[in-house]
Image (cartoon, rainbow, N blue to C red):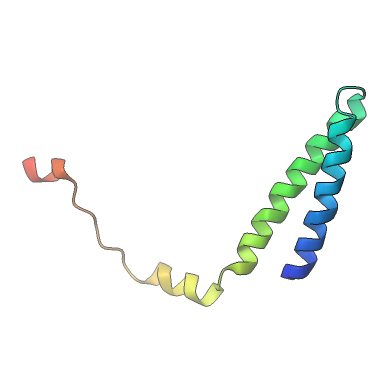
Length: 77
């Protein structure tokens, strides 16, 4: 999905969450739909985060070795 499509889906999902939240106490069905909408929102936010990342840059970061941090306790061994 493209960034704009994900943002539109998030807006729709937020609207649904608000509707379900109003009727949450009265219906078990709304409670299930609310839970599903919250999960869908989390998935969309993760997709949006992945859209913002540059895949080439992430690959390069994985290939470059990280400098090992030295802890204070390592000096006393």
